[in-house]
Length: 228
Image 1 (spheres, rainbow, N blue to C red):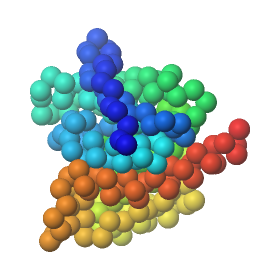
Image 2: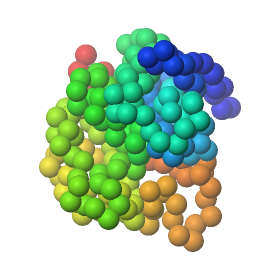
Image 3: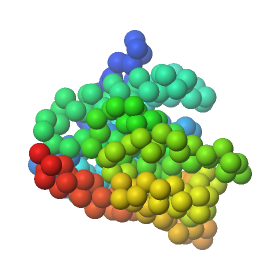
Image 4: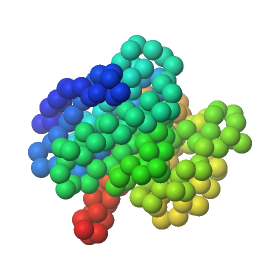
């Protein structure tokens, strides 16, 4: 039986943003997830991923950035995005107790999570779905500097045809990160992970990626328990 979704709100600098919490029975960890630039937390991809990874015993907390809550299309300034992330992480950690808390999300959401972790947000690991390593067609504008300051395990789930991450360039970054990073390529997938000729919808794609991410999360959980 699917775990129920509990709706709530979160205060981000005086702005109330929506949240969705899924907590399976006897969870082993919590994963806080942020949406990409063009869609909010209720996008079928996000909902499908969250529901599916809950079946592996991982609670999830999804949240909207303030600009989505206001019905805007342009993302908030970085400071506001970071504030939202920190508030969401703190809210999840307060409910999780001694269990591991990971962070991540789709594209922009995952990138801001990684920046927060690089600057001290105490996540036990990162799940990056379609990490925007560089703008499309501009691999020289690589966004990797902060990644090398991250000490926790990182999972990069990336389509091999994603214009935001040239495969060879991402592979090079992952090699430089060493055993902290794991790359899970999605053959033929674009930035939305859709594959030409395949008929899977966004929710189904989210479910499939959760199945790829769950083993990584469980490894992080095992390592965290061993280290305590």
